[in-house]
Image 1: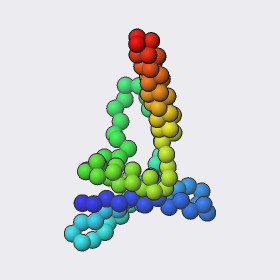
Image 2: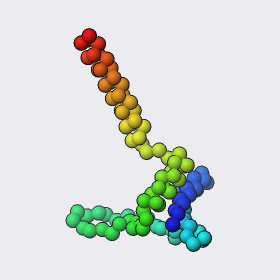
Image 3: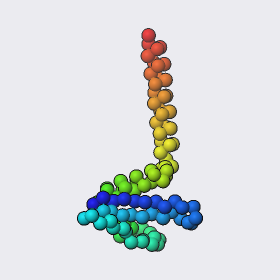
Image 4: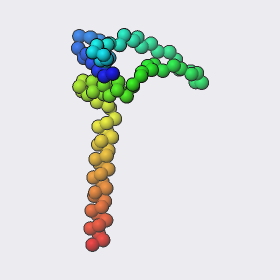
Length: 103
């Protein structure tokens, strides 16, 4: 089974339209529309998952590809990458200070 996800980002729509398809036995299949409705989550209650998907890793990979094509970026990624670069630079500066002083 090969999942494909398509994100329709047409500005004339109020929301983004997401289509989930897969190919199997030479045919293409599309997921039926899902209406997301929300209810209060009360402590101690057991809830069914919103989605229960076989071969979820393949679907998540297809979703990640679609998000990338739609240029959707995780909000924390640039922050984390910036912090990592700053930390690496700081460590390099500290190494330079310590090893230069010992010489």
